[in-house]
Image (cartoon, rainbow, N blue to C red; front, side, top):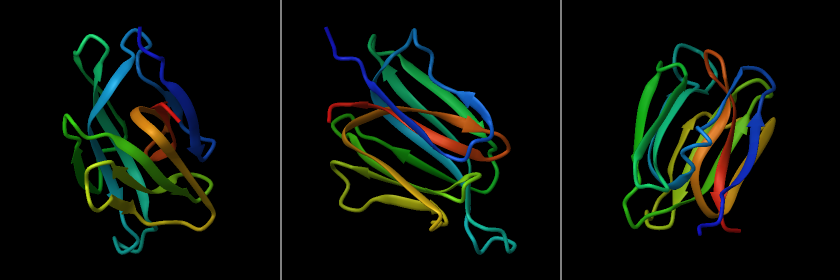
Length: 153
């Protein structure tokens, strides 16, 4: 019998519509993440995470896609997580309304993925320790808040 993943968050702004994975398909391993972001140099806009989607393997080994949540505008970034690799930390910032940046750290890559968007000094958050298996959050036209399913401490 496997240990259930713990829900953390979401962190960021209060707005947007709630989204989550299907409880009938609990996550076993995160496979890929796609982020759409705008950095602060794009047309004078502040940096922001416009959208996110991800895929994970459920307990039966079935690939489950989730999202996209938010919009698929801005620059796309794809992170493929190897079979023997685990996402161990996510760092993020928020301007109080939207998630403005995300950075991902695995146990195998020598450098982090990101940051995507543009860091804000208003609010920072992180999920670390154990293995991050999937995400949850709130979104509108942009990513308002993000949380994670984590296994371990």
